[in-house]
Image 1 (cartoon, rainbow, N blue to C red):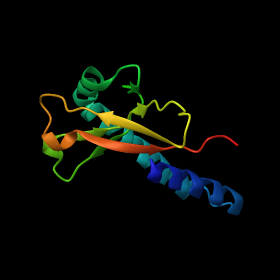
Image 2 (cartoon, helix red, strand yellow; image 1 turned 90 degrees about the horizontal axis):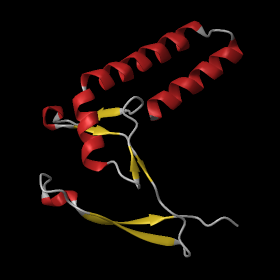
Image 3 (cartoon, one colour; image 1 turned 90 degrees about the vertical axis):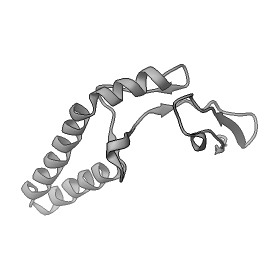
Length: 118
């Protein structure tokens, strides 16, 4: 996602300087790579939807970004959206549970810091 943001900013910068074509080609190459990753790992995206999607976790099978790990043959990271309700205080505690086929290190407790509207 950061790469996409950087490429888009470069397009805007080059638009202002008048040399847009090179930045557009780089952005197009990256978008093609993203789409190819989504097709190549469609089965894992669907598995992520089946395993994790619920009222609090949303995964867009048609628009997810994929990030391969260093050991890509074991799996990939699939982008999803986690719903975090606004708490009464500044910190909400969120518990992530392990599924039976995950390693024990997958379960963890995390602090989610939010900034209440002023």
